Image 1 (cartoon, helix red, strand yellow):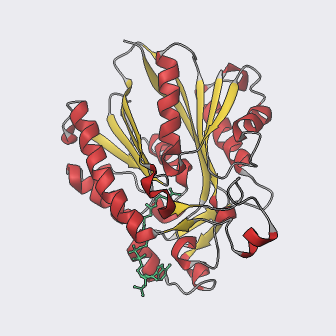
Image 2 (cartoon, protein in one colour; image 1 turned 60 degrees about the vertical axis):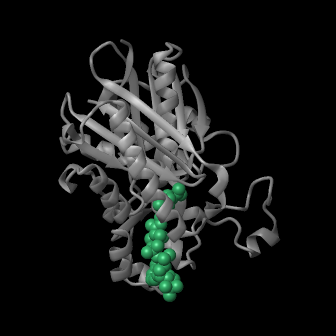
Length: 326
Ligand code: ACO
């Protein structure tokens, strides 16, 4: 049976660290509140000179190097982002240029924090249908550019970073076993950025009204996220007839430590089998899962044959999961 398999991973985090102590000097918040309510201690902030494609480039280069591949070996590039370099062209095309991936075709996916798993879903389908043979899937975000640094309810949460994977076909009994993607547009207003598109094109007025920043009703989003993710992980395991005890790792989107704990509890997986790096990077939206996956690979927390479950929830609302046998 033809499946797709992740053959390599890479990630990149900008050097600049913004700690909770730093934030205490910017807004009316405290290290104690942020740590207790989110699990975040610090996050990375891209240099002024860096855009999403620059972070994506570093992560992609690492994934290519680790696979022993050159950029022209790639035949498709999918970039998941809500903070692309510019409205057009796609960040995937800019990344293609930077990498010199002359044999690839590229496009972007916008599914907020679920964007990496949406992209993996498409890549998996295109491998299984034999349309493509070697796909670079990247999640890259510079959320610091759309964060209102005067809004304590959002600015403590987000961070910048990028992660990349390369996937190829396999006939072996391993790889991506199943993917699940979902959306429900009825609650899109709970988490959105109103400015800069055709609804509210950039103007002096939209800037004055701060429409080019993330607007989130955190508490309502939190409740839907917990309920939805609990159902999603149970459904993903059920559909694969896999008991949670056989999972070696849960790699969740890093939105909030309390959401991660609730999801793990629902399937009874202990926290030592859950990859958590939110304390160091905050919520990097589409980048968080490939960054966490890359860390898990590099620290040898994943071994051949392991079952791992990836899951995410984000604006839209969107949510998605992947069950993988490594
Ligand atoms: N520092 C201090 N106090 C704060 C801060 C802060 N940074 N932020 C909010 N507060 C206050 C509020 O003003 C409120 O005060 P009040 O009771 O006097 O009115 C109180 O803390 C509680 O506020 P809540 O919003 O109810 O806090 P909550 O416990 O829900 O935590 C958080 C907020 C962290 C945002 C949480 O709701 C959350 O993580 N939500 C889910 C986020 C998520 O998963 N998003 C989807 C992915 S992101 C994407 O797709 C781009």
